[in-house]
Amino acid sequence: MKLEHSIPLIFAILLGLVVLSKLHPVAAAISFAAVPVLVIWQVVIALRYKGPDLPADTFEDKWYENP
Image (tube, rainbow, N blue to C red; front, side, top):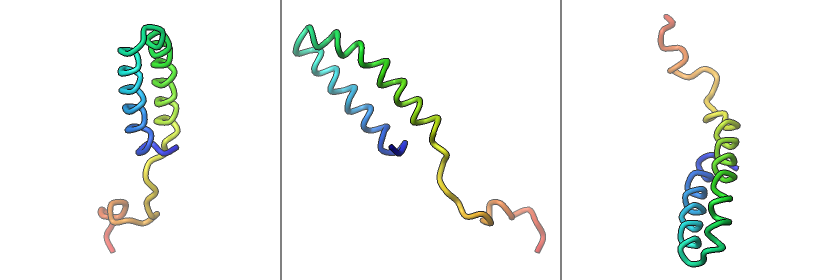
């Protein structure tokens, strides 16, 4: 999963867990147990993210060299 897609997804899931925990007390315990799992999941995705792919010889890489 890409980092750009996982960030809105994690916030939507956390918001859903908050709403669910307000509706039913048993669901609150499940929601509180799920939050650390979701945070660890997000950290793993962020650590595996390698960044955008750029061409090898861009202007930002060679601006300091004389032609």
